[in-house]
Amino acid sequence: MIYGHGDDTYRYGEKIKINFSSNIYIGADLSGLKAHLASRLDVIGHYPEPEPQRLEELIAERLGIPANMVMVTNGANEAIYLIAQLYSGWTSIIPQPTYNEYADACRACHHTISYENTQELDSLPDDRIYWLCNPNNPTGNVLVKGFMSHLVRTHPRFLYVIDQSYADYTKMALLNPRELTDCYNVMILGSLSKTYCVPGLRLGYLTASPIIISRLREIRQPWSVNALAIEAGRYLLENNCRMLPPLDEYLDDAVRLRRALGEIEGVTVLHSDTTFMLLNIEWATSQEVKQWLIDHYGILVRDASNFYGLDNHYIRIATQRPEQNALFVEAIRACKGEL
Image (cartoon, rainbow, N blue to C red; front, side, top):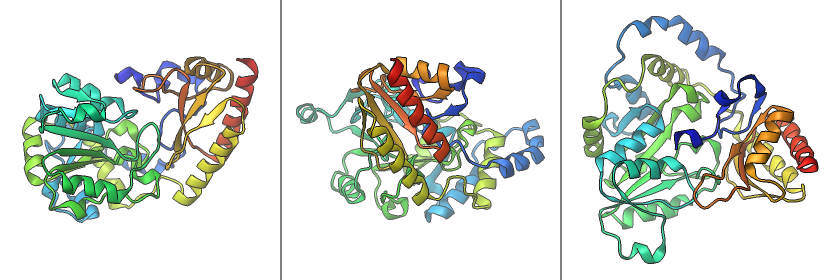
C-alpha cells in the first residue's frame, strides 16, 4: 500500500505549493539541523553503526527507561514489519479505520487478520496481537490512557502494539513506557520523524521488554538506519530541538480550521484530538477534490478513500500556518462552487 499514503508530492513536482496531505507540520525551521548535517557529510563515506546505540541511549534517557528497552528503526514502518515478522502466523486484531501498514505487514507475514468484529473475537486463538494507533491515523482520535493501561494489564496473554507516533500532536495523556516496565506484552512505537518534522530521514523507534527487543534485533537487517539519520537524531535530542509550534496555539489553529470548514455546506469535519482531521465531502469524490485543489490552488490533500471503512468522499488534512489554513478554506469554498 506504499503508493496509497499521503505526501505524494513526488507525483506532482512544482505544482504543489502547500502540502496539507501529511499529518506532519510543514512549517518547521530546519536550518540548524541542515547546517549540522552539512558539517557532517563525511559520515556518508563510512558504514553507519549496525545498531545506533548512542541514539538509543539518548531516547532511553529522555523516556526514563533502560537502553535495552529501546530500538531505533528506519521509521516506525520498519518496527511494524519487524513485529509482524517476529510473530508470523499469529492473529492480528486491527480496529478500523487506521494506518494501512499494520494490515499490509501482517498479510506479508501470514497473519490471520480481524477488523475487531465482536462475535469473531470470541472464536480467535489466544496467540493474538492488537494493533492500536493512538493518536489514530487518519481520525485523530485518542483512546483514554487509563483504558489503555487497563487493557494491557488485564490481558497479559495478548500482545499489544501501540503506535504513539503522533504523541506530540495532542494534549491528551498517553502511555508512558516508564510506567510499563513491568509489562511484557506491550510494544510502543514512537517517531522522531514526526516529533521533529523530518519524515524524509526515516527515524522511528520502539520500546518493549528487553526480551522482545533482543528477538527483534536478531531478525532485522544490519545498517537499516543510515549515517545521516543517526547524526540528525543525535543532534535533535542532544540540543533539545523544538520544531512544532507551541501545542496550545497549534491546537487552537486546528479548532478554528475545523470550525471554518464545518460552516461550508456539504462538508462534515469529524472530531479529532489532534491537529489533523478527516473531512467528508458530500458534493464531490475525494479524487475530484484532490485534483481540483492541485490544479487551481497548488494544494495537496490526502485522498482517504483507501482506508478500510471509508468511502471515496473522505479527505484528510493537517493544520498548517493560519494564513495557509485560511487559503485552504477559501479553496474548498471555491471547489464547492465548481464541482
